[in-house]
Amino acid sequence: MKRIIAPLDYSRRWSLRWVIVATTVFLYAPILILIAFSFSESRRLVKIEGFTLKWYEKAMNNDQLALAFANSLTIALINTIVATALGALAAVLLWRFRFPGKPVYEGATALPIIVPEICMGVALYVFFARVGWPSDWIWPFNLSAIAAAHIAFSFPFVAMIVRARLANFNRELEESAKDLGASEWQVLHDVVIPFMKPGLIAGALLAFTLSLDDFVITFFTSGPNTVTFPIKIYSMVRFSVTPEVNAASTMLIVITLVLTALALWMQNRDKPGAEA
Amino acid sequence: MSDDAIVRIEGVTKTFAGNVTVVDRVDLRVGRGEFFALLGPSGCGKTTLLRMIAGFELPTDGRIVIDGEDMSTTPPNQRPINMVFQSYAVFPHMTVAKNVAYGLKVEGVAEAEIGPRVEEVLNLVKLKGYGARLPNQLSGGQRQRVALARALVKRPKVLLLDEPLSALDAKLREAMQLELVRLQHAVGITFIIVTHDQKEALSMADRIAVMESGKIRQLDTPERLYEYPSNRFVADFIGKMNLFEGKVVTREGARLLVDVTGLGRISVPHEDDIAVSIGVAVRPEKISLYRARPADSAITLQGIVTNLAYLGESLQIFLETESGNQLIISQTNVSRSGSGAPRKGENLWCSWQAADTLLLQD
Ligand SMILES: Nc1ncnc2c1ncn2[C@@H]1O[C@H](COP(=O)(O)OP(=O)(O)OP(=O)(O)O)[C@@H](O)[C@H]1O
Ligand SMILES: [Mg+2]
Image 1 (cartoon, each protein chain N blue to C red):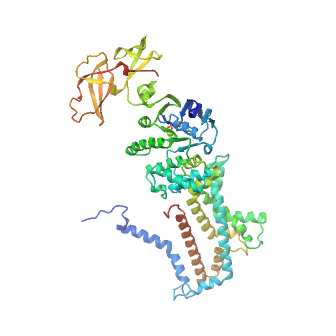
Image 2 (image 1 turned 135 degrees about the vertical axis):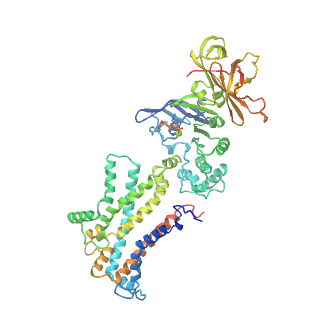
Image 3 (image 1 turned 90 degrees about the vertical axis):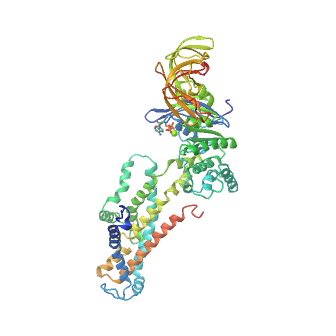
């Protein structure tokens, strides 16, 4: 007897299974190989031999790498806070108010998403050189140029995400809060911001990861004393891909995953009444 | 009556951008503790009028006086009025108890007082034990009770309800109609309800304002509106109506002599002055059917049954008279046997009392 298989009955279709396998391999094979080599005894990236943590030890004892890592985290953190706040404000502004030149402003805030990163990088490089932005302040203030650059290119993403969320806001929620006696600020704080929250968290997460792994724009805005993690890895790789680089990259992947999981967990936990 | 009015609307007009007048010089008074309904077809301006009372729209002209105070331009959060929105607008991120407590919290009511008041009002709307639930764990009817509780807990002078039952299914809607009336009696707060459902308005309200294109066409008790509609619009909008065209011939004391197309000359009791060209109307349930010509002197017509509609509690009979008039007659279903019920194609006599005849101008 011939079994009829529905088009979306994917578990019974070999072709669909193959798509799943192929895409997964395609996405994760390079990363898995990188992780595997970071535990390999051999210095050469030909064959995985034995198991060791010595590359991790080495990477962690590399002061330059540690500094680059601290720089990256600091920049990402500052960027996340500022870009999320700016993006949220821009989104609320565009959602809530009508003002002259609104379409122009709307386009202008979305532009950095479209402009090729390399162009923004060069533009920022020229800009910082032209205004003579000081780069010899003490840490972490010497990172200000990079942080500013990151904020500039990541806040439009936040604005876009938050605005998409606000588009679904039921205006009667706002009116009913006001009807119950809330002031404009109370409405914003008690009703609008809680509604925006998933968008804010998603936006913040995006801003964080955009900043943490940005190479192009950072490359043009960093100086010899303000090396970030991706830039440092790049300069190490230029000599040779060592297991030390693999170990460092693996740590970055793990940190990103942990932070993402944390953010998602927080988002779920914050749903009120979830405990009830 | 003037001192008794909790809401006084005086010459209120609302014109939106583009010169669309949505509410047109409306005057009305709503009494203390009254259950008041704004009834009218879609787009007649009911919601706009309600939103002006709540403070979400400002009148272009006229005054809104609430409990003796001119509040035409007072913002909504400072009016002693609360509203139940059509979408209920229950805060999705707050539990039922937090939703209900919200209005008290922003008002600055002491924490110790909030808890008992929330409990009390949740009992009142039969949501005891639901305090910890989130709105997405509630049915539509329960969400509406939350919206009601949230407004009632503020002990407003007036509660506004915009089509509160339109999202519920028929059975629940009927139950909630009774429930709302019970609630209103229990709390003694003035209710102003907006609806386009005439049955809803008739069954719940003490008085009803019937609106058409931004104007109030008649303001009366349900009974008066049904039995004595003052114009064609109201007569047609509320219930079913058989309508003839007529011309007033002369007045004979408290009665008018009217020539009616398809009916001949009839004499109808009518005290007030009326235009010459009028509508002559009678409700379907006021008409009786006979197999032979009835003997008394009531208004009598003969016709053929063209159609029957069985509605359960009543039977609707469609009669076509010799002069081509279509009549609807409603018979109550009193006995199960149904013997003697009219059949399609049957030739029947119908008659009604002159006192049940209505004379309507436009
Ligand atoms: N902000 C606005 N700007 C322009 N026109 C509006 C605005 N709000 C409402 N209107 C118009 O006013 C008219 C009356 O609207 P309203 O919402 O008061 O009707 P309604 O009687 O409540 O109808 P429904 O039963 O469909 O809810 C409609 O034609 C509507 O298009
Ligand atoms: Mg409406």
